[in-house]
Image (cartoon, rainbow, N blue to C red; front, side, top):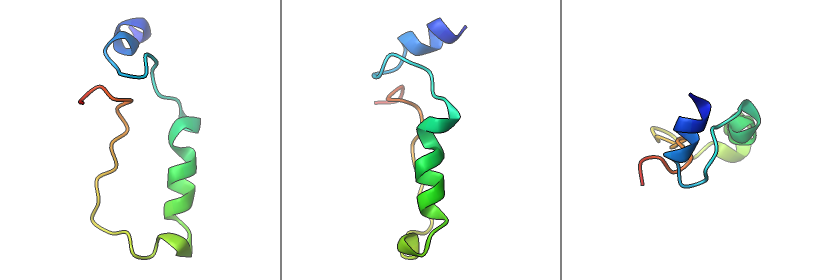
Length: 48
């Protein structure tokens, strides 16, 4: 199943928690205080 999903993405791999962890951590900081009501795509390019 993972191989099939990976073949459908521009990056050619499935996402792991480490792939989005940095963004989540950033959004929890004061540096991200002006970011609101945004959708951050985490599909690995599946929906390009």
